[in-house]
Amino acid sequence: MTGSLLKTYANSDALDLAGLVKRGEVSPMELVEAAIALVEHLNPKLNAVIHRLYDVGRASAAMVNREAPFAGVPFLIKELVTSWKGAPFTNSSRYLKGIVAAGDSEIVRRIKAAGLVTIGKSNAPEFGLSIATEPKLYGTTRNPWRDEITVGGSSGGAAAAVAARMVPIADASDGAGSIRIPASCCGIVGLKPSRGRITLSPAVDCWYGGVHSLCCARSVRDTAAYLDALAGGLPGDPYTPPEPEDSWLSLSTRMPRRLRIGFTVTPPNGAPIDPRVKAAVLATAKELEGFGHIVEEHGMPFDANAAWKTYAHMIAVELAAEFEWLETKVGRPVTREDVEAVTWEFIERGRSIRGTDHARSVEDLRRIGRIIASDLLPYDILVTPTLTQLPRPVGYYDMGETDLDRYLSRWMDAVFAFPFNISGLPAISLPLGWTPDEIPIGVQLVGRYGDEATVLAASTQLETAMPWKDRRPLVSA
Image (cartoon, rainbow, N blue to C red; front, side, top):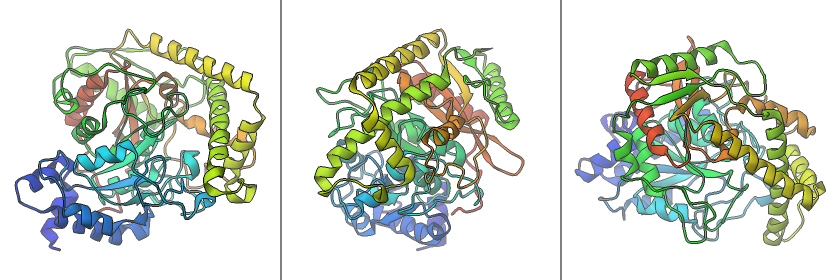
């Protein structure tokens, strides 16, 4: 392993690396060995990769289609949602310890077809029920920018690994901000696509359209190309967003027409916002105005506290139902000792909610989603904070908490994230703000339903004007 190869690997995004493979300048096996070397060197400090699948990666590298869009690019699968046959599939829970995936999910089939080479699985909180990544089963993932602050969650292992340049891109999923929040905490790019953009097969639906899959990446173009690789539904999927006129990668490079852009720095639950976060949003709005876009302040008119309570009630019922199904796979009922305290409280609450109340919650959530989407129709883009606060200290979002309502109140740092899971609108977090001591601040761009193209094009503009490519965390290749 040469130092020049490691330097090239660490300085390149996924499409750059795939280009080297296609031109014959490096082999997929060389890239895999570079990624393995960096995981072995950096992961003891970060705990981002919790299952090493090096043999799988090496075997895949030997069979890569060099014409695939991400030919030979090392990759991580999240230890949640995504199913890779034969790999651990624990959802970071002691209850599922030892369980392996029986088959590939449709997303994994598309990942393989895109030429990505999986070398491991990334850490996540138990069942994705935290916006930190500190599961008892696998331990805390550390932020490569600052050891004492959270990486975010639930895609925290993926975000830390991408930020530290172990891999250029990694699998991620988002049910209430779980792609965008860790992207914000780790200074990378995280897009939650429109509802229904990517099939969840073999599942049909999850959280009534609230859960979405995509990636953590370091560049907008990698995000767009990965969306090209994964996008598309299957017959019978419940949500069908409009199809683009061209590839997402191509659309992301087109200079957007003059856009009407709203921005807000006023949390819709009346909570305070960190002045450094506010400054990052205002600086982004000013930059967009400098491009010639029409930019104006626009608040979000809905009761965020009530919406979050309703969303959490729905999640509780869905989780209780999931554990009822999992009991048939594990062979015994789940007990309080099998899961973390927050997970148990969610299960118990879900079991206590009547079916008629659950049906009403689902209808209420759809009504809230309509309000949010309708309110934003006059705007091509809405700019908001990703989080209202800087990354919290490790341990702040403690899943050992037995008071579920108190725990859920802490999640309201993400008051600008979960509304777009409820409404199904595409939303991206970009690393556009930094404190003087180099703590990243994410700024969120939200688009109309089905219009990832405008979100990506505006993101490319900002990536050029406010570049983050050369920023490196303390723990990095």
